Image 1: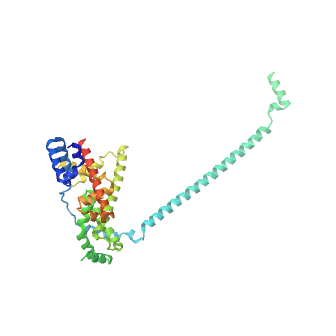
Image 2: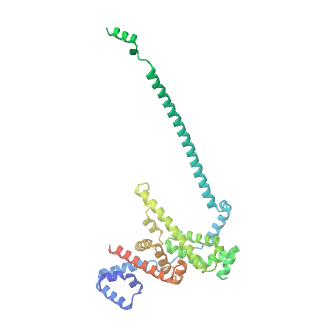
Image 3: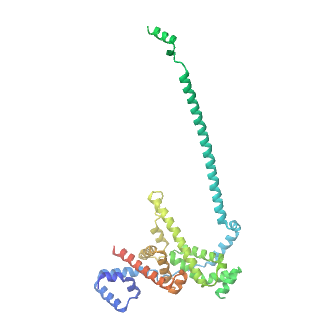
Length: 151
Length: 191
């Protein structure tokens, strides 16, 4: 028998649910294999650790009674289907938040548009001034003054 | 008082029936919760919640199954929800630890070690922790079937009623749970 076979049938061996012949074969293998022997002991001790566990049972009546009376006195219980109300309140808050966002957004974008249109108006008038205003050198008098200054 | 009579009285909100029901089933419910959670404080809280839920929904009980089966179902569901919440909390804690936000030693293993009702020895605590971790790694269905069979000592028929599955499915789940546990324990002790 190989060690692998023992490893694959460990729980069956521990619970003694394998056929008697297989149990005897594993017993024989364990007598001659220290590695498998240690492994079986370790796993048996761990697998059965909760088996004989003594559970201390608490008396639940007092605590449940207290929780029930607290539940009945709680304000939230007078509101029918409070979960639905919470969800509705949350939805209303989200909608209000979105509306405020849209309002602020639209206001901001309109002020930006106004300021942009003002800027473009200024630019246009400036451009007009620039092209319509006369440069001193453009007139004959201006040129004459320029040359006289040069000389 | 038989269980169906008890249910009828509970529907009528007879206070004495609450006490009778708790006295009759508190050990069963607490044991089921404890075997799933392996923590006495959590098991006590969840067991209380199981009874509170039963009282709230008793009108929906149609006596088609046994009252104990229904209690097992509630206990298992509540315990699993509690474990899921704890898993989420421990995940958040581990993320916080990773980023150094929380320097306390609050990892799951230490919490679990303190939580176990160990009869004292360090070896017992270590073995209990190894088994609990191996059980935690099993798929949920396998874990429930295995726990109900091994620790609550229910028959395959009773487990099939609690889990709403056929007896052959339960057999298969328990077999796979044992094989999975065996593999995990062998890996642990061989490495």
